Structures are given as C-alpha cells and as structure tokens.
Length: 304
Image (cartoon, rainbow, N blue to C red; front, top):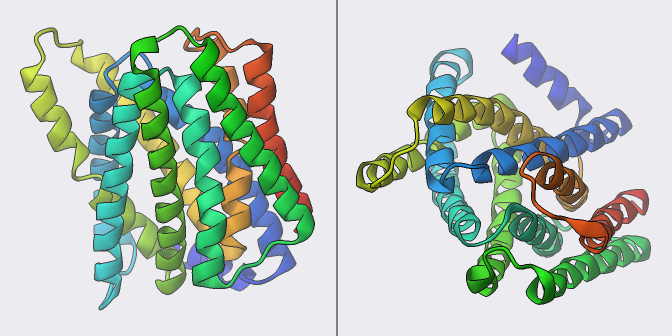
C-alpha cells in the first residue's frame, strides 16, 4: 500500500493535479501545525510536552521505518543526519521561546518569519522565482510580522519581563523553520520513495527530546501527572505526522517557497486556538495583524 501511494505521488510531480494537491496539503499543514503548537505550549512545560510528543513519534514511526518502507541508501543517511541536527535546533528554539512568551505572541512571529527566509533559500537552492504580485504578498506578510512584534512589545502584559527575549528567540527560530523547510524539501526530493524519507525522518528526529524531557522531569520539584502529558503526546504525534508530512509532500509536488508561505495561514488558526482553547487574550488589533500575515500568504499563492 505504501509503495502504491508513493508511485501515485511520483506520478503527480510537475502536473497541475500535483500543484492542486500541494495547495491542499499546505493548507492542511497550516491547521495541523497550529494545533501542534498549541499542544506543545498548552498547560504543561513545553519541554515535557515536546518530549512526550517525540516519544510517541519514535514508537509509532519505528515499525513503519523498519518494516513498511524501503530503507535509506548511501547519501540518504547523511541527509537524514543533517535533518536530525537542524530539527533539534528548531525544537530547542521553540521550547525556549514558549518558556518565555505566550503562544499567541511567539507562534505568529516564528511561523510568519519562516517563509520570508524560505523564499530566499528556495531561490538559491532550487532556482525558484516569484512574480511581482507574489513579492507584494511577501511584503504584506512581513508587514504583519513586524507589526505584530511591535504591538506585542507595547501592549502585551503576559510574561512581560521575558517578552523581548521571547521575540528574539521566535525570530531566530523562524530562521530555523526556513532552514528545515528548504533542507527537508531537498531530502524528500532526493529520496526516490518519499515515504522512506518521511518514515525515517520521524523515527530519527524523535530520539532527542524524550531524553531531555526525562532529565527535566527528574529535576522538577513539582512534577505534573504523567497520564495527561502522555495523552497530549500521543495526540501531538499524530498531528505532527499530518502537519510536517503534509508540507514535505507539498514541497515535493510543487514550489518550496509557495508551500512554505501558504502554510503560514496557520497564524489565523493559532489566534483562534489561543483565544478559544488556551484562553489567551487576542483582541481585534492582534487578530487583524495575524490575518495580515495570512493575507500575504494568500497573495503569494494566487500570484503564482
């Protein structure tokens, strides 16, 4: 079944049907990634949440990687090793930012700044170019990002003493988002069977955070109940498969820059989740700025 699905994906590469599917996958990744970010931030320590998610990712991905897909060969192992380093850096950055700022403060800056860097990476590595309308979309997106950052600096009261470090960490983590998006696109395009890359990616990159979370758990004075954390991790693992898997397949089927930018409509979903689920105050101005980021992404897609 996995082999036939891989052949179907390969048959769509470079076609109009493939481009449409890439759009659907990128939008799906947007919604799922906003849910993923909320699961990591949530009411638990973000280090513990990410550790629980990755522990389940490791357990669930192991049988698929080991028995259901072809094993990587040759240089594919080196590509996967690079992905492990890049994603570890990204996960540490996210945990540090979430430890210092609210979800609706950190998440939009991380996800909004990521595609800006990705556009240049896709141009340098894959030779992708944007039209004038698409660059207008990038300008709108960047305006929303920095407008949101300035608004947060002036008005946000939650975690005020750590707000500036949280924003700097969010911006730096956005750069790692661009790095892993471009690098993962290279990896999934280089590997003949896309599901080989996906299965082994989730299996190998999930090894690090459970160890860090276990060490942090051991040193905590007040430890949260383990079962709610475990259930959150299980849900996060399935969401991670859908989110990261969808956008990586989208970058194989269509342009990396467009998929990365379209995924950042997740900022709108993040605003709704932060308001409805995490009970964080969003307000009309911040919501408008988050929608500006999403509008920039839509202009980029329509201008392609």
